[in-house]
Image 1 (cartoon, helix red, strand yellow):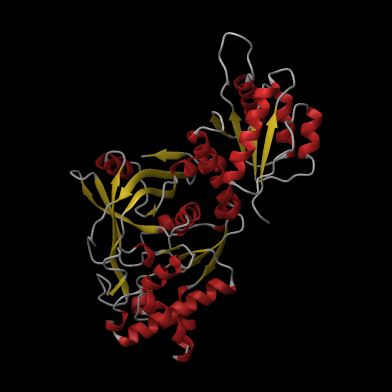
Image 2 (cartoon, one colour):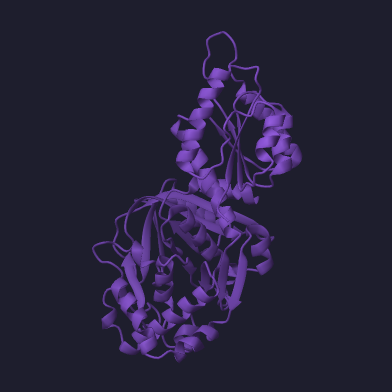
Length: 444
């Protein structure tokens, strides 16, 4: 089922209908420019009967309720009775202030609707302004995007391959929590099951995977040939599992098993899966994988996943790094994604590169409070044009706010050491998503 947004323009016929009609037409045009499938009425809904008749046959994943003019609480009550979905309340700016009549009185209607939604215990998004304003278009776009990812998560199957390593319990998820809070189904499989599948593949069966990987990773032919073959076997095992079980995101155990029990790391496999549209985190961090999924969904780009490892107050930057499993598509153009060996275990292939620059990025994490409830980390910045900082993969992020303060506040606040770096500005959509899910967003 596709995403369904419904535009609900309410009002009464005693205000200046010429002004209301003009704004109705512009609103429809703007909304269809954002979401071509949005459902819009053929006329303004200027009575309870017209509202009821319009919404009666509809289903909605997002209700966009706009006060074209003042409307009393009975209107929003009908909407809340019909739809159990996120609501965006949209107030129009008064079009003319000339000492004569009040043309719309949209703002008073918004107070009436907001008061009623509070009584219903319903959270909602809010935007003020007219359809010609860029800030309005941006805000509405962000809310629609958040509602889309909220719906998408209800169809998401996230796989946790193996258990988190000792001391990494922050990434461990419960299937009940995933389903209740996010609507996500959590699948589980032991790492040894995929290792055993990988060991059983013949050279002929992995040929296509070797060819594909060689087109993505520079210098793969310089890695030990047995490790390259075993990497291709893992690539096929993970790909088959993802396809056969309709997996949309994945959190995989990596060390020590893939070094000790298999002899080849899984890092590069996870990097490629990210570029194939399966957001994949290492160290079995399920909430890291979910953060990557949301980041990728909202930007259309693969997300970086890593630890904050270095701070430079002079440049106001935080370096995010991991052993070598970033998406190949994020590699700098001058180097591309290169094959390497793991920085500690000295076994390959892992990925080696610095990430390409990007003018707008968002640092994002779904985290947990000490008592078990959830919270969201969000910070704005840009990815600088920097080479690889350490063995593995790295991204140097110049944060919009003070980098040192972000680090100190995050450490004192007990945040997890893994973060997604979304290649795009999803800050407002994250804020809206947090509100829709009832999860507080901490903005850094």
